[in-house]
Image (cartoon, rainbow, N blue to C red; front, side):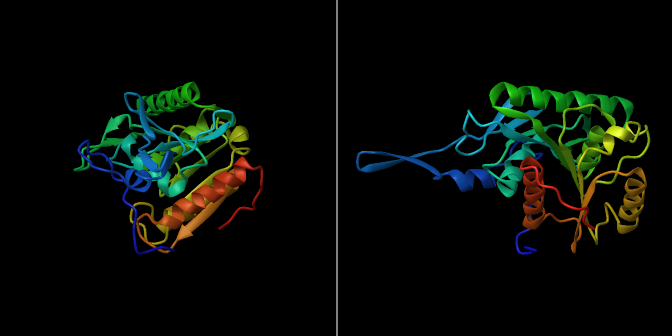
Length: 263
């Protein structure tokens, strides 16, 4: 695991400056005009609507139907996390979308949150549906390759929406977010059993401790859900290996490969 450079996805502040992606692609695209080389700076992050951001993959091919990865940010952040997320997952494999939380966070960062209330959940369903609609308007999206992922409270909301609602999802990932509790998250148990899920947790996490992970695993096992598990020997920090594992799992689903449940 790469413990040298932890990844910070806290992008709540509107005054945040140049992103990691901007640094990576400043000179990534060039074209030759005679003897000179002219640099062209791509703009991969687009505001599709208030509260929604879109990511355009490098060398986008309009004749190829791309998987869509929808991201729900962690507590106290915003949809601007997409700038940091996609370069760590893949700048080529997916169209990316991110939704802003539907509540105001109580954390000092004063970003947004994903409240697990009836109103909050209904608003989150609408926000994710808007992500799909705006992405399909601008890009060629494969209808059967839409994935939902999130971190912390965003991960918990991603699991709830995937398990409880009839969104057109091919799978869901929670990175450090517990299974949802209350309001019948397993009310559509027969449909939930056919949906691939990935739970990513850290052994030393204070937000999602090991005893809660164990309880969630027992619940999902008894429900008969398809669940891949990844555990990391760290606390609540984010590392590059986590996003590499996310990309690998997603591409397994995109390419039709199957893998056994991993604990």
